[in-house]
Each structure stands twice: as C-alpha cells, then as structure tokens.
Length: 449
Image (cartoon, rainbow, N blue to C red; front, side, top):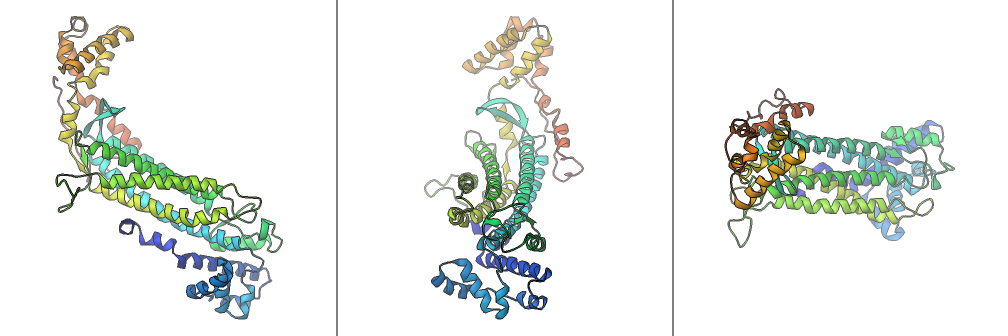
C-alpha cells in the first residue's frame, strides 16, 4: 500500500544507489577542497570527478572486509587507478557517512515540505467549502455548542502550517556536515577543507564534532516527523468518530465496487484513517529510538547506526505516505450537512443553555442563581426528553425575568457563526482567494426546539 501513495522521489532518496552516490559526492567535494589548498594536484580532480561506485563489486568486497566504507572505497578505487590515493585522504568513515546522511535528510525534508504544502492547500479548500456548515461541537464526546465543520478544518490548516515550520527548523538542524577526522580534532584534515567541502555540498560545517555529528540533530528531525504524524492521527480520529453509524456526519471516500467486510456487505469502514492511526504509532516509536541514540559512549560508538538504517528511511517514507493518503481522504471526503443539523437538534435545544444563562445574568441575576435556573431545566430536559425552550417558558421564575419574546431569539444557530469570517481572515483564508470553493451561509432560522 505504501508503494501506492509514497512519492517515487522519496524511495529514491533512501535507495542504496543514492546513498552511495552521496558518499561519493562527499569524497569528491573533499578532494576538490584539498586541491584548492594545494594538497591534491588540480589535474587529478577531473578524473576523480568521474569516479564510480559499482554496487555489485562493492557487495563482493564487503563479504571479505565486512566494513561497508572499505568496500565502498575499494570499488571506487577500481574505477580510478592511481588517483584513488587521494580519495578519503585524512578522513574517517563517519566524515563521509554522516555528511552524506545529512544530504539525504535534506532531500527528504524538501519532499516532505512539498507534501505538507499540498495538504494545507487541500485542507484550506475544504475548510472554505464548509466555512458556514454548522456542526455540533463536542467536549468529552458530549454535545457542547455549535461550531462549523469549516472551523474544524481551519484548525487543521493552521496545525499543518506549524508542522511545515517545524520541518524547516529540523532541516536547519540537520543540514550540517562534519569533515573533522577521527575524534573530531582536525588532526588529519584541517578545518579549511571542511569549510570548503561543506560549501560545495550546500551544508554548514558543524561548529564542533567528535567522530560523528551529534544525534540530537537527528532526534530533532525524527521527533518533528512524529509530531506531524501525531497531528495526522488526530485528524484521522476525528473523521473516524464522525463516521460512526450513530453520528454519520462524514465518511471516507468509498468507491463503486469497494467492500468494507467479507462477511457484512453493508459495511463502510474508516479503514484509511485507521491506517494513519496505526502508522503514527510507529513513527512515534521511531522518535523514541532517535532520542535513545543521542547518548553514545565517549567520542562515539555505533549503537545508533543499526537503528538509523531503519528509522530514518522508514520515518520519512511513512510520513510521506500518510500525508499523501490523508490528502486523498480530504479530497474525497463525504460531508453530510443535514445529518449534522439533525444531530444538533438531538438534545432539543440544550446547546443554547449558556446563552440563556448569560441572558439571565444580563438581567441582573448572579451567575450562581442563573446557572441554577438553567441547569434545573436542562436536567429535566435530559431526563424527560422534552424541549428545553418549552421547559424554560413553563418555568415561572425564568419567565418573569426573560419573557418569551426575549427567550426565543436566543435559540438561534447563526449566533455561533457570527465571528467565522474574522477567524478565517486571520488565517488568510479569504473569499477572494478561495472563491471557487466557498459556500454561502446555511440558512438556519431561529426555531423552537
């Protein structure tokens, strides 16, 4: 399934071919830097830039050396001849591997940023489409007060914008190189070579390193992906909750001929959102492993290496997949405004309890007294399944303070939509920008419930 939604570019980023090409790119940049300070002959550089890594040959050498860097260097050396003596000059394995890994991570962040921007656009379009679509707000899973479905989605737009911002910060943290030799002392390769090589690679030199780049940088990156995945899970859970049979306010895309159960032909399950929920758990687990990788022995050990070969590619592929998948869910999301309206009316007007209480306070009652009057009628409405408005009208104590002419207008859903435009404008979601998707306010005239 991941093959279906993940970008081919993301799979390419984490391919062995790209990985070893990045190693070679680092080696060549370092040779070029050595040449600029007069250590490597300038005439050797054109041939060095033609160096290749034969993956099949590297695998053969690896069986003997059992060390991927020496196998890599052996393969590259066979493509060069005597110029190979300048490859890896003064370097340690992590100079190449960590710097190349940074290049891969930068490539991955570019693709993930594109995913986020695409999802933000899709969410914004759907938010504008349902800007005025009333829906009951729920707290603790219980009816609270009306909101709009567009406002739910607008919250997701802003959350994904924060995700994009965090990803940019994570990219800065990881866009560094380290060409400082064993233990990071520059004893065998001067800082000038590092500066020149990193500049060629589009990276910043790490201000200080030991034998590796410090893994708080990688933990920053993976935890950022975990936060993005957790946000997607939050959105997915909302859709799952709204798709429950008892609620029925939205539904995942469901194509002709699609089946939801081998046993029950009627089933239409939120299986795509459930998939996102499960995969988000996996990415959060990777974040924990990335944080565990921060604490290494002395100048380094390689306890982080084995896990990073799994968590870094997987986290990128999974978040790329989930972003794409959720975008497709939102594009095809089925929305049922009439069911939303019907559900708002299930409690027979109880959603207006705060408005009634505030009106009583405005008439001079203490908050405690107003709350008591409203709550006793609200509880009776719950218990007897009667109209809240009618109970208030029949309550002599309430009626003497709020006559029917003042009470009935309080039961108006439009009251809750009066600041929607302002909220959307704050988010930059304006009618002019999204003219093709915006709907006019739904007519919900005041009514006795």
